[in-house]
Amino acid sequence: MHNSIVLALVVVVALAFDFTNGFHDTANSVAPTIATKALSPRLAVALSAILNLIGAFLSLKIAATVASAIVDQTHVTLAVVFAGLAGAICWNLTTWYFTLPSSSSHALIGGVIGATFAAAGSGAVLWHGVIAKVAVPSIIAPVIALVVAGLATRICRGILTAADAPARGIGMRVGQIGASSLQSIAHGTNDAQKTMGVLTLALVANGTIAAKAPTPSWVIVVCAAAMALGTFIGGWRIIRTMGHGFTELDPVAGVAAQVSSSVAILSSSHFGLPLSTTYVATGSVIGTGVATKGRVVRWALAGRVVIAWLTTLPVAALVGAAAYGVEALLGATAGTVVLSVVVAIYAGGLFAMAKRNPVTSTNVNEPWSSELETAEVNS
Amino acid sequence: MATPVKAASTALLDWHVLGKIVEVSLALGLGLVVMVALTVVASDRATRPSSSLAVRVAGWCATVVCLGAITAAVVWGILTITKKA
Image (tube, rainbow over all chains, first blue to last red; front, side, top):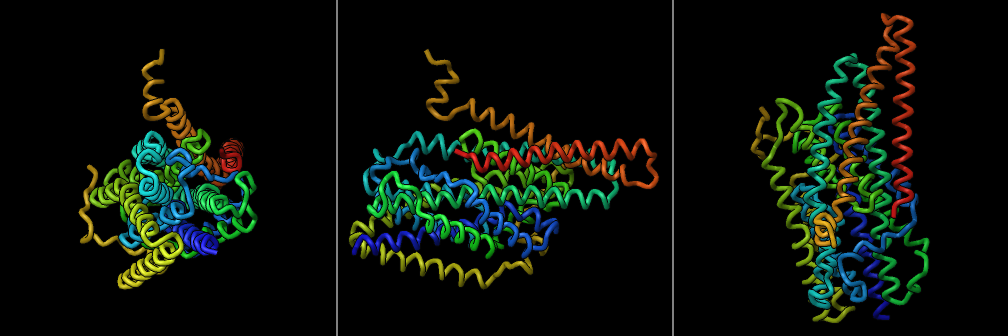
C-alpha cells in the first residue's frame, strides 16, 4: 500500500517534470521561428507540440540510462527518483520564472545526483561520468553552436545578396519551419524518453514490472502526451528571451541558428555524446548576433544565463538531497506526500508571481526593453 | 602505452567523438545553410521573367539538386532520431 502511494506520486511528479520539460524547452525549437514571424506564436507551438508527440513515438529505445553513467544504479530507489524529480521541477520552474533558458536534462541529472548522494554517499555518484557526460559538454555545446551559426550567418547573407527580397523571404521562412520541425521531433524523441526511462526505473524499483520488461504502453502514451501538452502551453517567458533577448533575429539569422542547432544536436546524438538542446540553441542564437555587423548582443543577459547553467547541477542537486532528507526523516510515504504538497505550492506561487508580469503569445514579440539590459553593439 | 589523447579521453572526455561532432556540425551545418541559400537564389533566377532560357534551365536544375541535398540531410536527421542509441 505504502509503495503504491509512493509509486503513484512518483508517476504524477514525473509527468509534471515532463510537462515542465515541454514548456521550458519549447523555446529551443520555436523561438527564432516566432521572433522572425515565420509562423504565428500559437501556430508555431501547436506545430511543435504535434511534432514532439510524434517524436516521442518514433523511437522506443528507452533512455533509462539518463542517469546510468552519473550514479550507481543499485542505489536508485523510488525515494531517490522522487527526490531527483522534485529538484529538477523546482529548478525548471525557477529558471522559467526568471526567463532563463536552462537544461531540463541537467536539472534532472542534478536532482538525481543530489538524492543519490544523500541516500548512499559520494561513492554512489560516478564523478567521472558527471564531468564527461554533463560538465564538459555543457561548456563545449554553446561554443560549437556559436561558431557554426556565426559562420553560417555570414555565408548565407553573402549568397543571398544575389536573390530578390521576396524570394529571400519565402525561402528563409520555409527553411526555418523545416529546421524548427526537425528540432521538435528530435526533442520529443530525446526528452520524452528520459521521463519514460525514469518511470520505467520507478516501476522496476517498486517491483511492478520485471527488470528486463518492456516499457508499458501507458507509460509511453502519458509521457508523450505530457511533453506535447507542456510544449503546447508554450514557455512564452523563455521563448521571448531566446527570440528577442540575446539579439534580434532576422529570417537569415533564424535559418542559420535553427539549421546549426538541428545539425549539432542530431550529430552529437548520432555519435553518442548528446549535447544539451538548450545550450546549443542559445549558442546558435548568440552566434548569429555576433556574426552580424552592428547587431546588438546583450552580453549581460548571456552572462546571467551562463550563471544559471553553472548553477543548474549544484542547485538541483541540493534540492534533490534536501528532498531525500525529508523522505528519510518522515518516511517514504509521508515524506513524498509532504514534498508533493511543497512542490505544488512552490509551483503555484511561481505561476501566481509570473502573472504580475505575464508573457503570452500576444506580447512575446514586443521589443525587448532596453532598460532591463545593458546592450553592447558589435563593432 | 596510452597516447596523450587516449589518456585525456579516459580522464575526461572522448575527444575523438567530440572532434567528429565538431567536424559534422561544421560540414553539415554550413553545407545545409549554403544549400538553402543556393535554393533561394537558384529558384529566384529560374522564375525571373528577365532571365534567359539557359539561366532558367540552370536555375531549375540547381534548385532540384539543392533540394535533393536538403532532403537527404533531413532524411539523415530523421534516421538519426529513430536509430539513436
